[in-house]
Image (cartoon, rainbow, N blue to C red):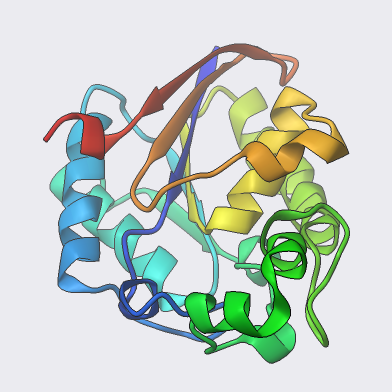
Length: 207
């Protein structure tokens, strides 16, 4: 049995401004760095062997803080664009409240949380799923099957895609899944890659 730890990056500077970020390479805010430290504390009981993150700074910085806080700076880290955030296309950089006013509540919700509706010139969650899951199966799952405890520091939508895959969440139910900044999903994975147990560790519940 191995542990799979999924953690969304801490609050970014654009999260703070309530902007759609997507592929934009934004750094963590001060609060985001503190969330990463809190996340590290929440998984201090698990020895980490392998790490995966995206090619965006906010995820990498979150992982760096977690590994440093838990004295795991010597482990193997893979960085890959397959698990980066969903591309928001024309919405990138737009304030979400302004977008809601512009597009209306129904279209806003479709762009933000639906399975297969993409914003103009952007990606849907389905598109994100189709790049994230092959990476999960080829790299992350292989590490787990080899007996390694694995941490994946990524983004709200790439992690929603992985959780959907792990838990077989139906397309019409995935909109209900929200993963907060710095929140951790801990899975126990058996030797065949199946989920044995799941626990959510949320720093906001500890304050």
